Each structure stands twice: as C-alpha cells, then as structure tokens.
Image (cartoon, rainbow, N blue to C red; front, side, top):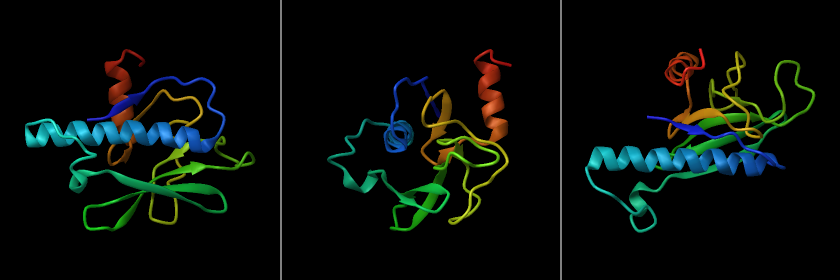
Length: 139
C-alpha cells in the first residue's frame, strides 16, 4: 500500500513538509497494521505499534529516520536542504542508499508541493511510482 500526498500549497518550511509526509506515512502504517491484524487499533493507546520517527540535519540533507520495533533507527528518506544542489531542488525527497547517503538518481517528490507517493517504509521505488501514475491515468 501507499498514500498519495495531495498537492500542497503554502508550505513554508522543510519541517512543515516533513511533518505532512510523515503524517501520510503514519496513516499508511496504521492501515497496514489494521489489514494485517484484522481489526482497528488506536496507536496512541497501543504504544507497541507506534510509528516512531525523527530527523537529523547533515551538511546537504535532512535525514528522516524511523525507529523499528527493536529500537534500531533506519533511514526513511533524505530531503535536499540546499538551494544550490546541481541535480535537485530544495525539498526534493530522495530514497536512502544507506544510513549516510541518499540515492541521487531521481527525486520521489518534493515536500513543498506534495503530489508524491509515500508508504510506511519510505518513498516509493521509481517503477512503483510509474505503475501508480499509470493507474491514475497520468502516463
């Protein structure tokens, strides 16, 4: 499953854009859990299933991470935080290549304008994005 983050207007900070992105990821997490478990859950009351995440600023990016059930932090996405990147725009969402580096092949969306797909495990792979856009009649 994945969530389409709707087009967004008036996002002023990268932090606001990240908050919206992660809100959609949390909703996808909840829907996947409920589908797997077969019943509705309240994540606030059932802390075991809580979707914990945070971010760390690096020189060029903001690393968004999520915490797994065993407490391990895994890179969720990288957000370009500079205006002078040669390939990407400020706010572009990049898939993690590792904990320290993003995949710099193509952005998966931009936190400032929405209209991208996100799931509880991170930004969508390029072939998945292509398939989802085809289903939406965009290709």
